Length: 127
Image (cartoon, rainbow, N blue to C red; front, side, top):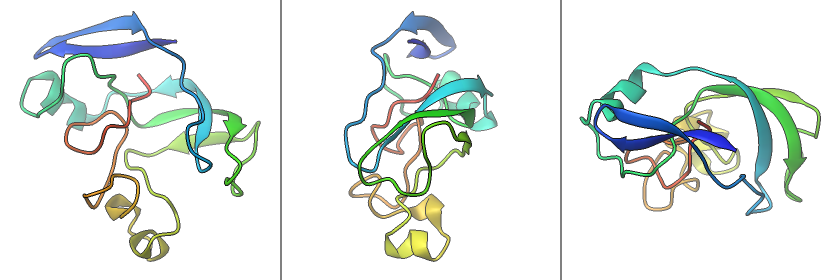
């Protein structure tokens, strides 16, 4: 797949990267049909956030579910979805309270995780 890759401050490029795949039973694969740059991406783009070179940007995406892990029961193949900035498991204490931005399991050792964003876990973006 093609993705927006961070090469350093003010330097990004579209590159071929390996296709995403189901890695855990709770994973969902989405074919991204639209995405938007977020204002928070500018912190990284301008070099004001700790983001490693070679990482894929991208959050706040729209798309179609093309595969679901065996533990997924809320979405199905063919569903159209909007993916927010943050990642939540849906079942930890904070997620059950509606505080998905502070998920306790998506980014072990930290409260909160995000797609392709500095200091919010190793999760690749959907660039």
